[in-house]
Image 1 (tube, rainbow, N blue to C red):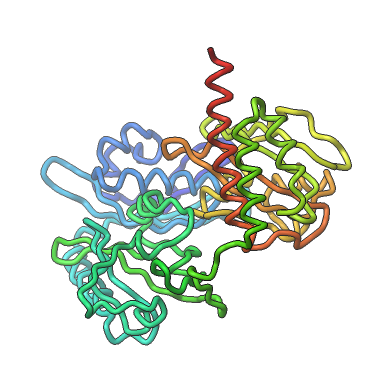
Image 2 (tube, rainbow, N blue to C red):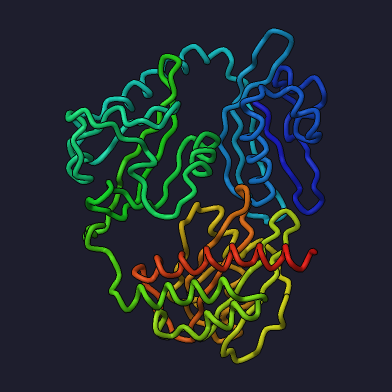
Length: 399
């Protein structure tokens, strides 16, 4: 087993002992220092997870990973472990070749995967979906009862039929394939039936050459909402239609923000509306605002993407974000922007272009606990029109 240390302040690597770790020792541990070399010898399926692990080193996050290295026609298996030290400057870890144990491990994993498939008699809501077409293959009685479905009826269900709300399921599944396990909040239900808000554990695994998704409900809201009775009041629907129509007639960002700011009927307590133009790859967010702040924000003010609402939504695969008290937050942007401006709560909705987040619309208040789940449909509808009209405005300004 090799023990190693990273000096994060100097971005340097050193080994703490002289033991050999097979093929990784042949290049003086170049594997840890040279990304191109590492990519070339890694088994292709393990490249993404290894790069995530390296990123976690730099973020001082604990890491545990099994990966494979190719050498001619031989595949070597390794276990990598990493941890931050008490000295903030250093990050340490170990790497061990486990090729000799892999047959035993494969048998162990196969037994675990076989157990994951057995859900019929589970005493909690859990279901199995095919990885190929996301079809529901099996579900516990508790899952069927919770979602008011009956798989014995012959009706076919897909994962995207049962996951409700404006959520990017393909992106969630992509992250699931990389991380193998995800815990997140989802809205679950069938069309015209009960919808529940639940904390779910998603697991990706394979058995006998086939891939599966296992969805287990580990916590759910006590209250259930009937989709059929969830329509808005006629007055609210008319107001929402009017603001969406008005936004589609606006010819500038400022005009759109002004129109949303005027809408106090739909959003009582709203004091400020913000629009964030997201450029994640450039680590930049450009913010525009309209409303009553203790210290006005200059139009087009730049902020780092790291630590923002956008990053929070992206990393946690959130449908939207409600913050009830910015002073309880650990996000950098809340203390950099919202708290200094006297804003104590907000609701945020993100929109995407070809899978990349580009727009975040944020409604803010000077009071805590101002926004609620019931306002999300209206926020979503307005954000979508804002996003579409923004494209038109940019297209016109480019001509």
